[in-house]
Amino acid sequence: MLKGIGVSPGVVVGVAYRVESVLGAGEPQSLESAAMVPGEIARFDRAVEETTVELETFVQRIALELGTPAADIFKTHLQMVNDPEMTARVHAAIEKKRLTALSALQSVMNAYAAQFARIDQDYFRERVTDVRDVMTRIGSHLTRKPGPAENGNGATESHAGEEPVILVAHEILPSQAMSLGNLAIAGIVTETGGSTSHAAILARSRGIPAVSGVDGIMNDVVAGDLMVVDGREGHVIVRPDREATSAYRKVQREFFLLKDRLVANRDQPAVSCDGTHVEVLANINNLADAQAADSVGAAGVGLFRTEYLFLTHHDVPGEEEQYEYYRQIVLSSPNKTTTIRTLDLGGDKTVPYLGRRNEPNPFMGWRSVRIFFENPKLLVTQIRAILRAGRHGKVSMLFPMITTVEELRRLNTMVKEAKSNLRREGVPFADDVKTGVMVEVPAAAVCIDALLRETDFISIGSNDLIQYLVAADRDNPKVAHLCEPLSPSIFRIINMVLEACQRTGTPVTVCGEMAGQPRAALVLFGMGLRRFSMSPAFVPQIKALIASVTTAQAERFAHHVLQLSTSDEIRAYLSERLHEVSAELEAIDFA
Image (tube, rainbow, N blue to C red):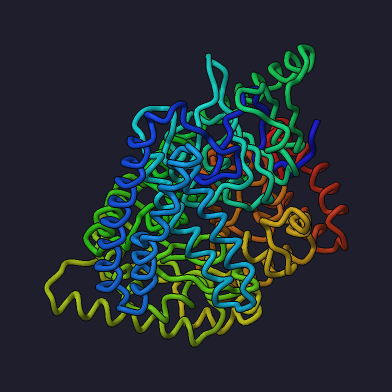
């Protein structure tokens, strides 16, 4: 049994499906005979040609959208792709060592990396990243085959039979997470990350058990291994014996029966025992999530993360494409109610067409609105698309990563100018789209009164707020335990924001993962929160929780929690209260 961090509740027994990088560290693959060499060289040359066409398109599109400086990175990559020396080295590795094109490419990339690493100048050492980017791009064309064996992202088919599939990876990047959507995944295990990592968010959005932070799991699991994933306790069992397999299959059946019972409340409003109404909304990444939110009975979409559209694109989506996608999202959202967050790129969500900066701590660096103040055209294009999509439902626009009032004023000016330009151009748009601030930087929470004078609504992003408050990277397993939702500091700062919103009558939502955790939700409800937004899979359980408690009970719980000094005390107290209110919901709480 291996121990990690339980990040999405439930139990599943299934077989391992390993996700490797396109250019992984596996053993070099050799050709079966010399007769295969010409064909393999031709395959490599085709991949280079396809990569060249792809990059040429990028250069034109990025230059148009972001300007020449941003496009220069791809011009450099084009030179690397068409470097005769690189081509000659790969050809030689195929001819002389009889390696496959992919293994030959890996060999050449390693040689370049070692060569640059020996040069005592930062500029050349940093070029390793560019080399890896180019080689990986060529490698993706080499592995782009039809059929289930490969999906173009380095994932290799490893399962057989009717057993559920358990995804096993070192990490899952946001762009990978979206591309894995078509796989019938029943569980996820990763070496890195915590409860708010992207693997965790992906798992919870789809209601599947997951464990993160399992050190060395990629060394312990081979393709097709039977595994058990316990997403509540954080346990992973590789190659369980017959007795353990039978026991966990029984728990798995009970878990899914409970989920099926809870979904029955989809058409019921979220109302407490004493009649207090609550809006239970959904966080979504794409169209499928919007449809899932509607199917489980969410009242609307409280957070649409637009960056996933950009992460799955090789270049910048234009205004028309964004508008059409947002329109579909709005029409598919419950009650056509959607809060659209502007781009929150940076940190671990990066796209090559914005360039790269070697930052010691990217989560606290050049990200989100900070990027787009340097690339205003990109943000203006998105603002225009959102305003136009607002005609098709009740749409709000949410700005992430706000730190100062000055930033908010600048954004509000950009929205005002976008409306004026659309009006002058005769392009239809919704003039009543509300604009809001995502409170996830502690500075914004501390200065909440000043922000409230400049905005229509507030959304509290608890995932980032927690990691910034405790100065711990939520995706780093060494410190992920500090990103504890049930902590005195996070409850007190959220309470401070809620009280400020209540004084001014400003609508406020908690749209981080806390909103979908029963123990945390009890406290938030008791603090006066009436708008919760969460992964669609958690909507039924929070509706059931609200229906099981009175407002006075929840207020009493919240008051007591705010007097406690440690996370352990809060966890123990809320575990008792949750059992008191709804014992069956204990099985699916993971906070």
